[in-house]
Length: 226
Image (cartoon, rainbow, N blue to C red):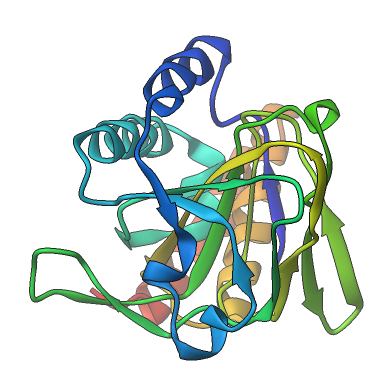
């Protein structure tokens, strides 16, 4: 399931992040890549242990916790602390799959990576290239969103970032361990929740809405892992 969440950050939050990242300590992005990914990764990344990285990540997480579309689509159990990357002209990231498991830095906790998320921080007109290409059963999907918009997609997807040919592409990225491991089950729950919300807004029959809501929660009860 590929879902666009728009917007995640408003102008004020984008400005706050821009101020934080302007003087950020960027390093070789291969520092956090697995063996296979490191062969095709060419970008810069913010040191995840730097105070500015933690501050920017906390700002993003607080915003996501209040985003009903994000919660509905991901059913988050745990979030890996957000990372930030930078692509300058000539930089890109070849086809790869994200690691299935990651250890949270500074802890013994490991998370299963169910969902990948990319939050665009640069306006699309500020750079050429840099499209995120996500492959699924219907073929490749090119994603290049407005600053403040985010795309989520299965972490099992083969994906890549096209080389940037002009300007600078800034983005945040992270992973979600969902309460519902299976992407098909999450998709079904998301569609059901979206339909319930739409029917509620249209003034649909209350008894029918209660029954649909019961179906949603009983499916979630059946599939959720806590």
